[in-house]
Image 1 (cartoon, helix red, strand yellow):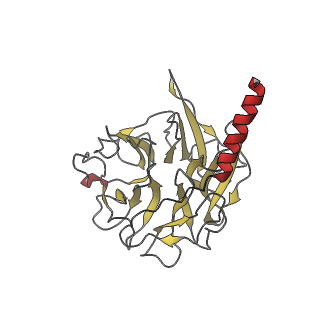
Image 2 (image 1 turned 180 degrees about the vertical axis):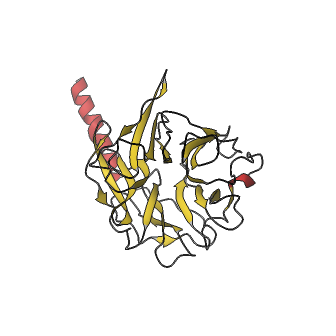
Image 3 (image 1 turned 135 degrees about the horizontal axis):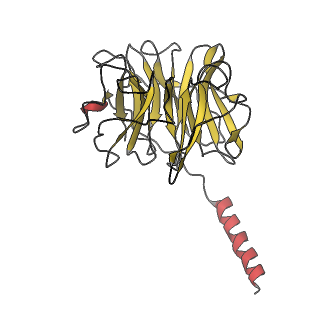
Length: 304
């Protein structure tokens, strides 16, 4: 048998196996446990939450870096992005460190979102030269020179209003999809935009089935694309802004109607910008709830 014929035979067998293979069932999880201050993890630095504002958190893929926005002292101005490290994905965090320039500026820099390869970073900034309001920026890490000068994603993605909570998903077939929120239509809504080139994105579209006439903002999507988290002040919550989620059995299915995560996660105060860890068993977010050290602190919850 020729090499070419052998290759066609092997390829045909692989295709038959893929067609015959059953679809993977969507994983199921236990209910979320009761949320607690991130500082309650034994050994975590007491500088995690302060009398200033801490919020808009995110985690690296390996769970060893926690990024957040804070207006604590010793920043460059306004809200800055800070990072705290830990040696294991379930261990305590050390003291947050300012990420410095070029990520931070004299203006508000917030909603950090590390890419899954660890070499890219998205965030939101009100720095000059944008499209208006808070815009989404991207920076890549140079192997020798560190983070490169951030690049605005352009005014076809950003708007003259404000954008927030960018997260890049690789779950969909084809190019990666950018999820974010924007108040370009008045109220804040959830949008998606597919990558169309080398870090260029197409025209944003509303995420079908999850928006409401109220404020829906700052999405986070599970790495397999089957679960979406966001914050909203829509009716049916615990009070103020709550964290909600929607799910789907596969990325080809529509999103389920969003459900409130309930009193284990939400409070009568505001809960902002949920971030789901890569393993999907840890959720971190900012909260203004009673007992916080400052205007907003970082909280977390786990599930099995």
